Every structure is written in C-alpha cells, then in structure tokens.
Length: 346
Image (cartoon, rainbow, N blue to C red; front, side):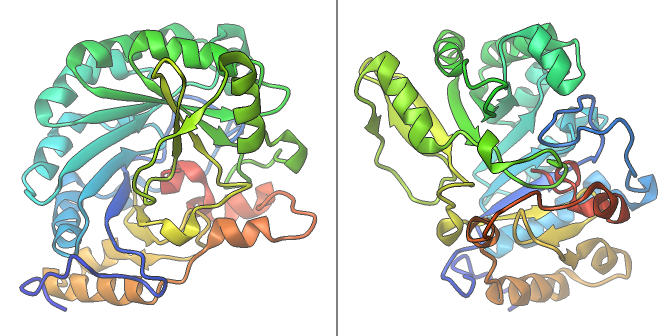
C-alpha cells in the first residue's frame, strides 16, 4: 500500500471501510457536562504535543488517499482552538473529502458561524441537552445557555446544516423529549437523542439512568402518533425516524443496540493518537510518525495495516458485560488523559 496506489475500499476484519474520521483539535472545553468531563480540574495534554493545522492537513491527505471522505472536527470544544476557519480552508484543499462537519457546544458559535461557512464547513452538530437554562447551569456548570441558542440561530442564518444532539438521562432531561423536537422544528434543525453511555468521564453512569431507544420512541408516539423509520444507509450512527407531519429526528442507541458492525469511524486525538473505537484502549501514534520524518507513503502503510487488523466492537462488548457499571474510575482517567472523551473527540 502506497500513496500512489490508493485503495478507497480498504476494509477491516469485519468488512468495515475506512471512510469517516473525527479529528479532535483541542482537549479543552468551556463546559463541564456530567456525561463527558464533570470534574473541575483535568490533566491537559501538553501544548507542544497538540498537532498543528499543517500536521492535521497532512494526515488528512494521507487518510483521504486511503478512502476517508467525511471529516468531523471535535474537541473538547473545537471553537476554543484559535482560527479554526483556517483549518477548514486547509482541509478543503483535499478534493476527495466530500463533507466537513463540526461538533460544538455552541457557546462560541454565533461569532464564528459565518466565517466557518465561508471557509467551507457544511454542517454543525450542537450539543443541546436541555432547553432550561437552570438545568444546564446545574448539569454543565455553565450559565451561557442563551449563547448556545444564539449560536444555533447564527448557524441557520449562515446557511449551515444543523443537527442537535441531546444525551437523554433519566431524572435529568427525559421530560424534555417533545420540547426538544418542537424546538428543533422551529430552528430548522434535526434532533438526535443519544442514549447515555458509560464512556470516559461518565463516572456517575449507571444503567438505570439510561433511557433506551424503545422508551424514547414510545414516549414520542404517545405525543405524536405513529413514528415511521427512515430507510437509508446502515453506516450512519443514528437511526432516523419521521413524524406524520414530516419532522425528522434520530436516535443513537449505542448502549442498548450498538451499531459496531457498521461503524466506519475512527478518531484522531488532539495530540495525534489514532483510535479505532470510542472504547479503544490504545492507538497508533501518528504525531511521532510525522515528527520523526516518515514519508506519506510510510504513514499510509502504518494506517492501512492497522485498519486491516481492526476487530473493535467496544459498545457491543460493553453491552454484554454482566452487571455493567462505569468504565473507568476517576483515578485511572487521571493516569491516562487519552481515555477522556474530551481528548478523543466523543
């Protein structure tokens, strides 16, 4: 395998193609959400270890030659990375990349939406777990709910496609399902409900807090009547549904119905570790490969060999654990910050 011999059909042991790459551009965040990074203090990645925009652009070029078509910029909170539109412009130089999206908490989105669109960003996904500012202040330790709403509005005005992610947690926001659907309808955004997962910093996770896909559908059907599934590609993480009036929403059921067998996603941490699964323990150090002077074909060989050997089914394996509890204790997270969701891009 060389850069002169690209193989878009590169597949792992289960036949899953290398097609979608999530890129964390920073491990810093300006919120402290309970399911991601609830602690006040963290061990941050050393600044000198963070990939530069030029390093990210070069790696994306290698991945694109191997079949990656879709990119998603994540964090931490990616808009804390200075001059992010410049990175989008750099990534747009790779013609085989067909889609560049951004996942953000939305706090800084209003000031950057127009520049991001002009740079070539196509879509944003905004995390919006509640429509109640008081709840967000308690749950995420942030008083900036209004800034998030402003950011969603600004994204719409800029012409960006918008999705809203809501992690549904029993006893916190599970009484807002229909409110979020109605807000998404008004905002021109598709809502995606996400089952609460035992990943990274979710050290307060328990199975009884999970609101399953089946229960979400049941509650929405009680309000809206029959809900029809949308038939489309099996590679998307969300199952999409449509209400009688045409309103669409999605559910990501990673806890009760994992989609591991059709997962074409991998993750690049802010310091250049390539992870093959959200639950992955180890990864391939691509920052070292860059900084010791490996050529693009040599890096491509390492990536291709690693993907071909991939057998990861992290969510499936976790679902089969008897008496399933939290994945990591706080002490083990502090020992290895790459286990945190804000480091590996969620």
